[in-house]
Structures are given as structure tokens and as C-alpha cells.
Picture 1 (cartoon, rainbow, N blue to C red):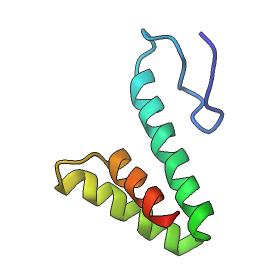
Picture 2 (cartoon, one colour):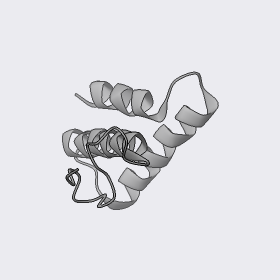
Picture 3 (tube, one colour):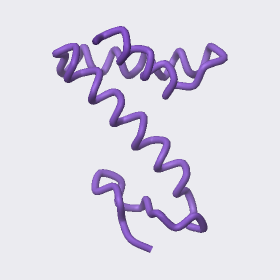
Picture 4 (tube, rainbow, N blue to C red):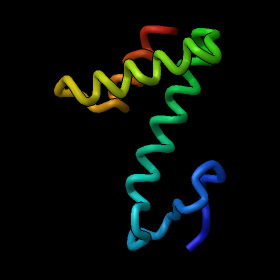
Length: 77
């Protein structure tokens, strides 16, 4: 059972690891939002706003926050 996400030290690859799936989803969302920031050349407050928007869209629509982030990435290309 090894650590795989340095930013999330409690995440692990073992399927029996408590919260492992949640951490993988969080890490995927974080990675996608970082890609959005890099492609759209956004930093700081703008990235916080975009991340909040993706999370709000995940909460208020039939799409997940990860799907909203992926759509933002595609639109920013």
C-alpha cells in the first residue's frame, strides 16, 4: 500500500484503503483544474473562481464537478 498523490498523503492505491477512491477523484479534479489554469493562463483569484464554479456546477446540475472541469478544459483550448 504505497502513497501515490504527494499532495494528498493519505491517498493510496489499495482498493481497500479507506477514502482511496475519494482521494483519486479529488486528485483527478485538481489535475484537471490545474490544466485549465495552464491552458487559459489563469492564476490566483481567477483560478479560485473557476474551481468554485466547477464545484457549484457539479452540485447544481446533473454533471459532476470533474465533468464540469473537463468541459472547462475543452472550452479553454
